[in-house]
Length: 338
Image 1 (cartoon, one colour):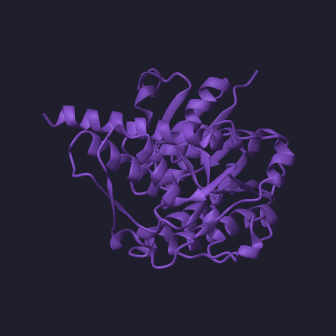
Image 2: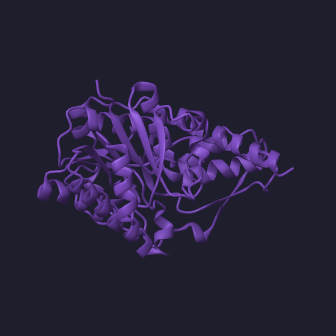
Image 3: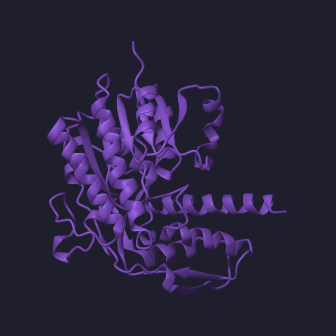
């Protein structure tokens, strides 16, 4: 029986690395991971032995904005499934370099799908990873946000994800590619980049516990409402998306079942800290967005009805694991700096 192959763009990111963990454990698929030559391998270092032995896990170097490298990656991987996760992802930074976000996220998706269309020997199910940020500024009367909610992007990043979303649908409608789109709401956990709010909080707390920085946590907007999902639940959802009778051209909102303000996340992380003295919270204007998508609560009934997916990880577990991840990272860094 022919082996199933999947291609994951952005394999070294938080989501990509957890998707590798999931697929290796739950399936017998071969995994091909697209990454740039300069990508750090920290998030997949626990799989380096399998990579070196070429045991089900293969790295393919390329760039979404380079047709030739994407064509080569597809030729090597011959995928049955494509998880398109790679993107410029930091909303605040997109205000300073919007064209980079448009180039990678919109043009990069166009190039990937164009090359899949042109390679006649493959016809994969393609997961297009959009974002809840496409909804942007949402009126309270439209909560929880369903798939029919109007797009109102509040950052160049969000605009680039609207483009990603629409390009994915276009290639289904125009060429019959088997694209399926997700708009994942806030998802976090171990390996989350420290430029996202809750991960920045956890990293700062870990550094305070180790007396690397003073007991002050710098914050941005603490009033934004978020629904939190665990990244490990997110990758389970992505697996079901492409394997549970996927419907080409469909778009799904996916998110957790615990909603709170960003400030509540900070309070919880401080409450489980080992630091016994008072931690001061200081607003840092550089962490504030020019416009904020401050009401991010999803209606996930459509996806749950189709796949039966349910989140398994509770908020407390997700946050504890995130803090422990940063505790470990800080200890490693402190050891290497000796």
